Image (cartoon, rainbow, N blue to C red; front, side, top):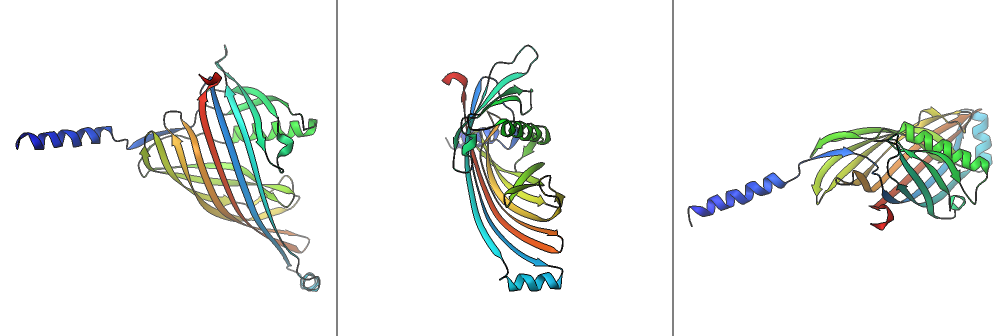
Length: 278
Protein backbone atom coordinates (compact mmCIF):
# COMPACT_ATOMS: atom_id res chain seq x y z
CA UNK A 1 0.00 0.00 0.00
CA UNK A 2 2.85 2.38 0.76
CA UNK A 3 4.04 2.08 -2.82
CA UNK A 4 0.53 2.20 -4.38
CA UNK A 5 -0.81 5.21 -2.46
CA UNK A 6 1.42 7.82 -4.13
CA UNK A 7 0.52 6.33 -7.52
CA UNK A 8 -3.21 6.48 -6.72
CA UNK A 9 -2.94 10.07 -5.51
CA UNK A 10 -0.95 11.04 -8.57
CA UNK A 11 -3.59 9.44 -10.78
CA UNK A 12 -6.44 11.26 -9.04
CA UNK A 13 -4.69 14.61 -9.23
CA UNK A 14 -3.80 14.02 -12.85
CA UNK A 15 -7.43 13.18 -13.69
CA UNK A 16 -8.72 16.29 -11.91
CA UNK A 17 -6.20 18.44 -13.74
CA UNK A 18 -7.15 16.95 -17.09
CA UNK A 19 -10.87 17.61 -16.46
CA UNK A 20 -10.41 21.19 -15.25
CA UNK A 21 -11.58 23.79 -17.78
CA UNK A 22 -8.98 26.48 -18.13
CA UNK A 23 -10.20 28.11 -21.37
CA UNK A 24 -13.46 29.04 -23.09
CA UNK A 25 -14.64 29.62 -26.66
CA UNK A 26 -16.50 32.90 -26.11
CA UNK A 27 -19.00 32.95 -28.98
CA UNK A 28 -22.56 34.31 -28.81
CA UNK A 29 -24.83 32.22 -31.02
CA UNK A 30 -28.59 31.72 -31.41
CA UNK A 31 -29.49 28.06 -31.93
CA UNK A 32 -32.39 26.80 -34.10
CA UNK A 33 -35.62 25.55 -32.47
CA UNK A 34 -34.82 27.33 -29.21
CA UNK A 35 -36.63 29.80 -26.95
CA UNK A 36 -34.67 32.60 -25.29
CA UNK A 37 -36.61 34.21 -22.43
CA UNK A 38 -34.96 37.49 -21.46
CA UNK A 39 -35.64 40.15 -18.83
CA UNK A 40 -33.92 43.54 -18.86
CA UNK A 41 -34.11 45.85 -15.86
CA UNK A 42 -32.59 49.32 -16.15
CA UNK A 43 -32.37 52.31 -13.84
CA UNK A 44 -31.04 55.85 -14.26
CA UNK A 45 -30.40 58.43 -11.54
CA UNK A 46 -29.87 61.79 -13.24
CA UNK A 47 -28.75 65.14 -11.84
CA UNK A 48 -28.82 68.28 -14.02
CA UNK A 49 -27.56 71.78 -13.30
CA UNK A 50 -26.65 74.81 -15.40
CA UNK A 51 -23.99 77.45 -15.74
CA UNK A 52 -22.58 79.59 -18.55
CA UNK A 53 -19.41 80.91 -20.11
CA UNK A 54 -21.14 84.29 -20.22
CA UNK A 55 -21.06 86.41 -17.06
CA UNK A 56 -24.40 87.92 -17.99
CA UNK A 57 -26.05 84.52 -18.26
CA UNK A 58 -24.32 83.39 -15.04
CA UNK A 59 -25.89 86.34 -13.24
CA UNK A 60 -29.33 85.48 -14.61
CA UNK A 61 -28.92 81.86 -13.52
CA UNK A 62 -28.04 82.99 -9.98
CA UNK A 63 -30.99 85.38 -9.92
CA UNK A 64 -33.33 82.57 -10.93
CA UNK A 65 -32.03 80.35 -8.15
CA UNK A 66 -29.57 78.24 -10.20
CA UNK A 67 -32.04 75.65 -11.53
CA UNK A 68 -31.09 72.13 -10.53
CA UNK A 69 -33.13 69.02 -11.13
CA UNK A 70 -32.80 65.36 -10.24
CA UNK A 71 -34.75 62.54 -11.78
CA UNK A 72 -34.92 58.79 -11.39
CA UNK A 73 -36.04 56.52 -14.20
CA UNK A 74 -36.41 52.76 -14.25
CA UNK A 75 -37.73 50.33 -16.80
CA UNK A 76 -38.44 46.63 -17.12
CA UNK A 77 -38.78 44.74 -20.36
CA UNK A 78 -39.37 41.03 -20.80
CA UNK A 79 -39.32 39.25 -24.13
CA UNK A 80 -39.02 35.85 -25.76
CA UNK A 81 -37.08 35.15 -28.93
CA UNK A 82 -38.13 31.91 -30.59
CA UNK A 83 -36.13 30.37 -33.43
CA UNK A 84 -37.34 27.70 -35.86
CA UNK A 85 -35.68 25.22 -38.20
CA UNK A 86 -33.30 26.65 -40.83
CA UNK A 87 -35.00 27.38 -44.16
CA UNK A 88 -33.75 26.34 -47.64
CA UNK A 89 -31.37 29.34 -47.74
CA UNK A 90 -29.89 28.54 -44.33
CA UNK A 91 -31.66 31.44 -42.62
CA UNK A 92 -33.46 30.64 -39.39
CA UNK A 93 -36.97 32.16 -38.93
CA UNK A 94 -37.28 34.09 -35.66
CA UNK A 95 -40.15 35.68 -33.72
CA UNK A 96 -39.75 38.11 -30.84
CA UNK A 97 -42.60 38.72 -28.37
CA UNK A 98 -42.64 41.50 -25.76
CA UNK A 99 -44.26 39.76 -22.80
CA UNK A 100 -43.60 42.03 -19.81
CA UNK A 101 -43.34 45.82 -19.40
CA UNK A 102 -43.74 48.56 -16.82
CA UNK A 103 -45.20 52.07 -16.93
CA UNK A 104 -42.26 53.42 -18.94
CA UNK A 105 -42.34 50.71 -21.63
CA UNK A 106 -46.05 49.80 -21.54
CA UNK A 107 -46.68 50.74 -25.18
CA UNK A 108 -44.44 47.86 -26.25
CA UNK A 109 -46.52 45.22 -24.46
CA UNK A 110 -47.80 42.66 -26.96
CA UNK A 111 -45.35 43.71 -29.68
CA UNK A 112 -44.46 40.84 -32.00
CA UNK A 113 -41.62 41.10 -34.52
CA UNK A 114 -40.95 38.65 -37.35
CA UNK A 115 -37.66 38.14 -39.11
CA UNK A 116 -34.78 35.80 -39.69
CA UNK A 117 -31.52 34.92 -38.07
CA UNK A 118 -28.48 34.85 -40.30
CA UNK A 119 -26.14 32.01 -39.20
CA UNK A 120 -23.78 33.22 -36.44
CA UNK A 121 -25.58 36.58 -36.40
CA UNK A 122 -28.30 38.53 -34.61
CA UNK A 123 -31.96 38.66 -35.68
CA UNK A 124 -33.00 40.93 -38.54
CA UNK A 125 -36.70 41.86 -38.44
CA UNK A 126 -38.83 42.81 -41.44
CA UNK A 127 -42.32 43.22 -39.91
CA UNK A 128 -43.86 44.22 -36.58
CA UNK A 129 -47.29 43.91 -34.98
CA UNK A 130 -48.08 46.03 -31.93
CA UNK A 131 -51.56 46.56 -30.44
CA UNK A 132 -50.44 49.69 -28.55
CA UNK A 133 -48.32 51.33 -31.24
CA UNK A 134 -48.91 53.33 -34.38
CA UNK A 135 -47.12 53.08 -37.72
CA UNK A 136 -44.41 55.52 -36.66
CA UNK A 137 -43.61 53.54 -33.51
CA UNK A 138 -43.44 50.24 -35.40
CA UNK A 139 -41.16 51.80 -38.00
CA UNK A 140 -38.94 53.29 -35.29
CA UNK A 141 -38.68 49.94 -33.52
CA UNK A 142 -37.66 48.15 -36.74
CA UNK A 143 -35.03 50.77 -37.51
CA UNK A 144 -33.54 50.69 -34.00
CA UNK A 145 -33.52 46.89 -33.71
CA UNK A 146 -31.98 46.30 -37.12
CA UNK A 147 -29.42 49.10 -36.71
CA UNK A 148 -28.20 47.59 -33.45
CA UNK A 149 -28.11 44.07 -34.89
CA UNK A 150 -25.81 45.20 -37.71
CA UNK A 151 -23.58 47.38 -35.50
CA UNK A 152 -22.98 45.07 -32.55
CA UNK A 153 -20.08 42.70 -33.26
CA UNK A 154 -20.58 39.22 -31.83
CA UNK A 155 -17.58 37.90 -29.90
CA UNK A 156 -15.63 35.00 -31.32
CA UNK A 157 -12.57 34.43 -29.18
CA UNK A 158 -10.73 31.64 -27.39
CA UNK A 159 -9.97 32.86 -23.86
CA UNK A 160 -7.80 31.33 -21.16
CA UNK A 161 -8.41 32.13 -17.49
CA UNK A 162 -7.35 35.76 -17.06
CA UNK A 163 -7.72 36.48 -20.79
CA UNK A 164 -9.80 39.39 -22.12
CA UNK A 165 -11.98 40.31 -25.08
CA UNK A 166 -12.94 43.90 -25.94
CA UNK A 167 -16.16 44.87 -27.73
CA UNK A 168 -17.30 48.32 -28.91
CA UNK A 169 -21.10 48.77 -28.81
CA UNK A 170 -23.19 51.76 -29.94
CA UNK A 171 -25.88 52.59 -27.39
CA UNK A 172 -28.38 55.34 -26.59
CA UNK A 173 -28.85 57.04 -23.24
CA UNK A 174 -31.62 59.41 -22.09
CA UNK A 175 -30.90 63.15 -22.03
CA UNK A 176 -34.10 64.47 -20.50
CA UNK A 177 -36.90 63.33 -22.82
CA UNK A 178 -34.48 62.54 -25.67
CA UNK A 179 -31.68 60.05 -26.35
CA UNK A 180 -28.04 60.60 -27.29
CA UNK A 181 -25.86 58.21 -29.25
CA UNK A 182 -22.54 57.16 -27.70
CA UNK A 183 -20.02 54.35 -27.94
CA UNK A 184 -19.59 51.85 -25.13
CA UNK A 185 -16.37 49.82 -24.91
CA UNK A 186 -16.66 46.69 -22.78
CA UNK A 187 -13.70 44.50 -21.83
CA UNK A 188 -14.68 40.98 -20.72
CA UNK A 189 -12.10 39.21 -18.53
CA UNK A 190 -12.54 35.49 -17.85
CA UNK A 191 -12.16 34.72 -14.13
CA UNK A 192 -13.13 31.05 -13.86
CA UNK A 193 -15.37 28.29 -15.23
CA UNK A 194 -17.60 26.16 -13.01
CA UNK A 195 -20.22 23.66 -14.12
CA UNK A 196 -20.18 24.86 -17.71
CA UNK A 197 -20.72 28.50 -16.68
CA UNK A 198 -17.93 30.96 -17.44
CA UNK A 199 -17.70 33.86 -14.99
CA UNK A 200 -16.44 37.20 -16.31
CA UNK A 201 -15.73 40.62 -14.86
CA UNK A 202 -16.50 43.65 -17.04
CA UNK A 203 -14.74 46.97 -17.43
CA UNK A 204 -16.77 49.67 -19.18
CA UNK A 205 -15.55 52.85 -20.88
CA UNK A 206 -17.97 55.37 -22.40
CA UNK A 207 -17.22 57.90 -25.13
CA UNK A 208 -19.82 60.66 -25.30
CA UNK A 209 -17.95 63.10 -27.53
CA UNK A 210 -20.62 62.86 -30.19
CA UNK A 211 -23.53 64.62 -31.85
CA UNK A 212 -26.88 63.03 -31.23
CA UNK A 213 -29.44 62.55 -33.98
CA UNK A 214 -32.01 63.80 -31.48
CA UNK A 215 -30.10 66.94 -30.45
CA UNK A 216 -28.86 69.74 -32.75
CA UNK A 217 -25.77 70.47 -30.63
CA UNK A 218 -22.69 68.46 -29.63
CA UNK A 219 -22.38 66.44 -26.45
CA UNK A 220 -19.08 66.15 -24.62
CA UNK A 221 -18.30 63.81 -21.79
CA UNK A 222 -17.32 60.34 -20.74
CA UNK A 223 -17.85 57.65 -18.19
CA UNK A 224 -16.77 54.32 -16.79
CA UNK A 225 -18.13 51.38 -14.88
CA UNK A 226 -17.84 47.74 -13.94
CA UNK A 227 -19.93 44.61 -14.11
CA UNK A 228 -20.14 40.84 -13.97
CA UNK A 229 -21.36 38.26 -16.45
CA UNK A 230 -22.22 34.55 -16.60
CA UNK A 231 -21.86 32.77 -19.94
CA UNK A 232 -23.28 29.30 -20.66
CA UNK A 233 -20.52 27.49 -22.54
CA UNK A 234 -22.89 24.76 -23.80
CA UNK A 235 -25.60 27.12 -25.09
CA UNK A 236 -23.10 29.78 -26.26
CA UNK A 237 -25.21 32.49 -24.66
CA UNK A 238 -25.08 35.04 -21.83
CA UNK A 239 -27.47 34.06 -19.04
CA UNK A 240 -26.76 36.84 -16.53
CA UNK A 241 -25.13 40.25 -16.92
CA UNK A 242 -25.02 43.14 -14.46
CA UNK A 243 -23.51 46.54 -15.27
CA UNK A 244 -23.18 49.73 -13.22
CA UNK A 245 -21.63 52.88 -14.57
CA UNK A 246 -21.35 56.64 -14.11
CA UNK A 247 -21.57 59.16 -16.93
CA UNK A 248 -20.68 62.83 -16.98
CA UNK A 249 -21.96 64.99 -19.82
CA UNK A 250 -21.49 68.65 -20.77
CA UNK A 251 -23.87 70.21 -23.30
CA UNK A 252 -23.40 73.83 -24.45
CA UNK A 253 -25.81 75.84 -26.58
CA UNK A 254 -25.95 79.60 -27.14
CA UNK A 255 -23.90 80.38 -24.04
CA UNK A 256 -25.88 78.12 -21.74
CA UNK A 257 -24.02 75.08 -20.36
CA UNK A 258 -25.81 72.02 -18.98
CA UNK A 259 -23.99 69.56 -16.74
CA UNK A 260 -25.54 66.12 -16.52
CA UNK A 261 -24.42 63.36 -14.15
CA UNK A 262 -25.96 59.92 -14.56
CA UNK A 263 -25.57 56.79 -12.50
CA UNK A 264 -26.97 53.86 -14.47
CA UNK A 265 -27.46 50.19 -13.80
CA UNK A 266 -28.66 47.30 -15.91
CA UNK A 267 -29.42 43.67 -15.12
CA UNK A 268 -30.13 41.23 -17.96
CA UNK A 269 -31.08 37.61 -17.39
CA UNK A 270 -31.87 34.88 -19.92
CA UNK A 271 -33.35 31.42 -19.73
CA UNK A 272 -32.82 29.01 -22.64
CA UNK A 273 -35.14 26.11 -23.48
CA UNK A 274 -36.10 23.95 -26.50
CA UNK A 275 -38.90 25.34 -28.67
CA UNK A 276 -42.20 23.58 -27.91
CA UNK A 277 -41.07 22.74 -24.38
CA UNK A 278 -39.32 19.56 -25.48
